[in-house]
Length: 146
Image (cartoon, rainbow, N blue to C red):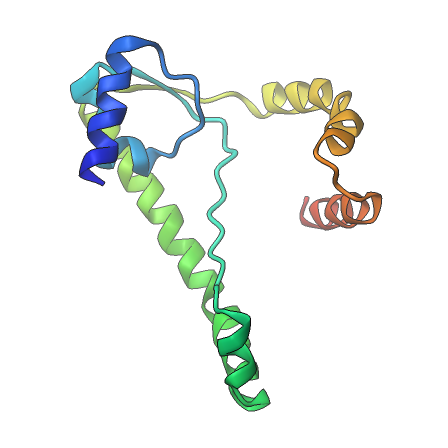
């Protein structure tokens, strides 16, 4: 993290930052020391905890252990998401305490921007080579949560 933070701080002196980040990453890098003064809270961050094991290791587990692994993972997701949200909230408070001013778009602004961006969705799906079936499944999953 030290080297990454040093590179991040160094790059701030050379050009403005126009990249997605999280409150936590801004706070842990202490980017207020490098001149960051403003943050735009777009509510797009979503932590994804993805368990990764090699196929070779997975195949060595008995079906019971595979099920236990998946079940334990599913059981803990809510707690991990809550911890992530708390970390983001605490980091935002740290940033505010160090003088960073936040801009939070209203729900109406978010809806209007989303509507404008939806005009580009099909082209993005094609450019990213996402299969139509996956795009349909993702859209259905998102609609189910809204």
